[in-house]
Image 1 (cartoon, one colour):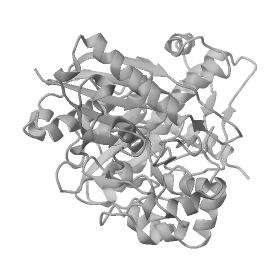
Image 2 (tube, helix red, strand yellow):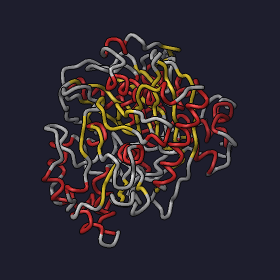
Image 3 (tube, helix red, strand yellow):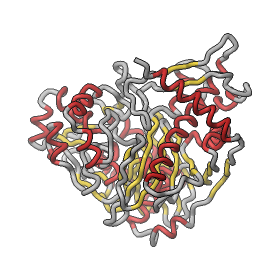
Length: 500
């Protein structure tokens, strides 16, 4: 029996899952880590805490599985994307806290790039829009604000990486010895990688004054990236798969070809539709991105990103103290028949696709004297479905413009997809079936599958596609008129968050 170890490094926790060859979970471990908010709009992580929690969960998962490390065929890594780290090559010491993908501090720099007319250059090369979400302006900010950092980067003393690169560096030896690499899916999220042609863009590096010596090598998602230090697990283990969390989830959902789509409900929500070998330009607020790559053939997807998805439940817990644990939200929301006209727009970090309004701020509208915390909780949960429905509307519009057909079903995954109330709301708004797989941890599963392909465990994609199974299908129950009215109320609330 072959076993695969997936390292799933997320925004609020580090997890490790051991899968068998059939894609079944054998054991898992998870640890939350601290979120730091030093100023409004700033979000930071401690890079060493990311590494330490990830390593700890890997060891815990192996112990829980009752496996020796030598029984693991390969490791796959999947990660929160865009989060930006810079460290010293000689010591492995981070020069600053990691700037998280949710962080909005670089909006002034983004505005300046837009004013310079670089929007079209960025869109053509990368498929992205100019936004603080992506890594490029975070790198520039660090180089500008850490004394001597740009000169040190030019001398090759510093290394940039998204979280996958940071973990790979540490796993393969760390200070002075670590492998400095990433995969195409993560590189495509930096706003520095020419996703259409392949390779780092000299034009974009020049526009942001970022030295090329800072950047990692880029490999296909299923390939041999390096071997772990023997001391970490007792024996050296090959790292044979890497992909950003959303591309890994699409892969774990068997989204290997054009027209297949999934939505992941995590800290944020991320809807991806495979577009094949074409990097498609969106006319409706979505972005183009590299999908996980197996072999030398580029693969692409259209993506819509919701910045605050499941994080709104954390806000109910930690901010409003409406619940003691995230699992309580469904019962609280179901204690009222509906939201009573309340709409929550959780624009805590601006609004992502399809709106792209970094100036938006969260709002609760429709409050009356009869509104209770249960109504707010239900509206907060519904906000996840509303934002995802707006993404699907944009994606169908793009598909229609390209001569395609609207999506017939939506595959779902991520922690919040176990909430039946949310999934039924999603189906009602979309008007198509919402399909939950047996293994909802498809982000980690995708990383395991990529590692298995990279290590030769699987013969090809057909073998993986045959393993996918549905656990439950949520059929839409609302008339389309009711769904349209609900979406219209949502859009009215969104406009209030961005009013000048």
